[in-house]
Length: 335
Image 1 (cartoon, rainbow, N blue to C red):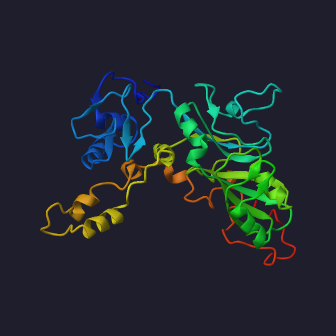
Image 2 (cartoon, rainbow, N blue to C red; image 1 turned 60 degrees about the vertical axis):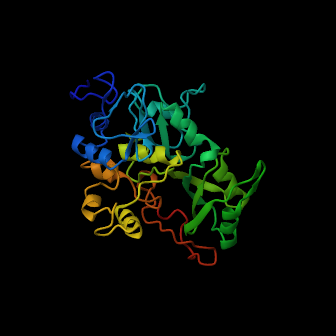
Image 3 (cartoon, rainbow, N blue to C red; image 1 turned 135 degrees about the vertical axis):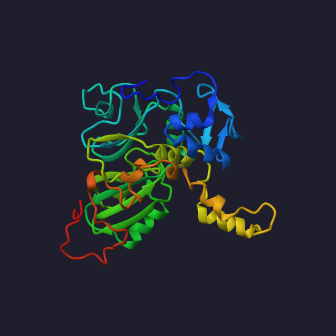
């Protein structure tokens, strides 16, 4: 039990417990809403759909909601950090330089997921969840990383096309990237590889050296309100989305999609097996609907909104080529 009198998930009662009780303690939903989730068939224990009355032992069994594991193990932490320049993405540094783990709580011991160069800013996940880290950094999952780069000069439409097709570097051809130019001298680039200084080398190969580089999104995670050097814990919704992004599971269908599916299968009055609208309305679209006052309010809805430290708030997704560039416009405008 902590200082506020709450018992963390996975602690307190030992042995099997009712599933709705464990979900409530994990912060997923109230016990009443957790029961609705169970009745809707959205909760599994060790891969099997549970029903009301089933129990789960958080210490030894896998509990999932919509295919995404619920973090029940005590002591697991997941921090989202806005790394400032001059800080090293390691747990320690023999040269005595400041490291990212010095910016978050000292206990429990944590490590960064991947790395950002010392002169690169932006979002970095820090955790002690080894299994999740392995999946997020494994090339087979192709986790997207989005960056905003301030560069010398303005890219032409042909150069943007080259980024989208792949750039030949000294260690081989890069995979196709998503690339746009919100304003002259400002490039938005999304990659899913993890080569050393890859974004800088790609743009340098085009003759546009990077002057400033900010990671604005890691997988589904973004946060435009996080100041440089600041951190926060992931919300339950963010953690589930992150787990789902490397699990191969599809996100749950929306209420409208479920209605359409029911209608197409003959779900109308008098048809056996039909699902009435009232039943669909009673089931939340996702766990975020089930959590009153969800902490997702501070999370940017799209990567174009997600700029570390509130930078580039005015940047749009419009692609500007050198032919469309406005003479005299400062490439750093919007930072």
